[in-house]
Length: 199
Image (cartoon, rainbow, N blue to C red):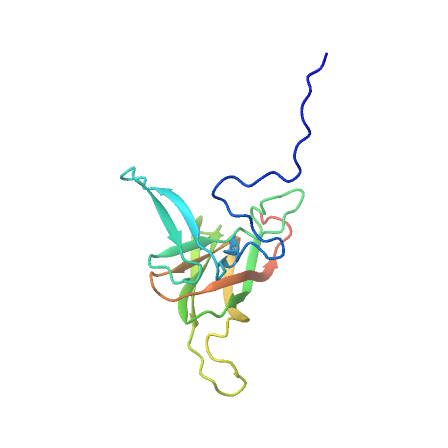
């Protein structure tokens, strides 16, 4: 003979001390997204992260301010290698590239300075070479076509001409602590690549 279980309640009561949210309103603001393309973006909310110091072994809670993109410490972000894969050579070893342009989309949230580094492997010398490009987002006055006060919080696109040869390009963004607030939406490396490895 089987045991009898009561039907589950489709509307369970709230635990004691937890107020029931109103059904016609959202639960408040979202702290946004923590992504690789734009950082933390939002105005209502905080992000608390548990952290352990690997040297001292002490733990603490790190508060990330969603309205402050100006990092106090030196920072680096490594973009994934955007190499078109082929069936016979998935990592494109031996295929030379010639990168001639960086297409950068960013949200204008303040003046900033950072460096875009493009690193490639040079087969002739058997070592990696890095090509740095310093990017400045200046305080733009209200003149000419500009009708909105700086920063306008809109997404802007800039094209950076470069000249980078080599294999397996890797893009990194570096910034010195307190060098300004920036939010990169996307970064595309443009150029030409050999389809077959060089012998």
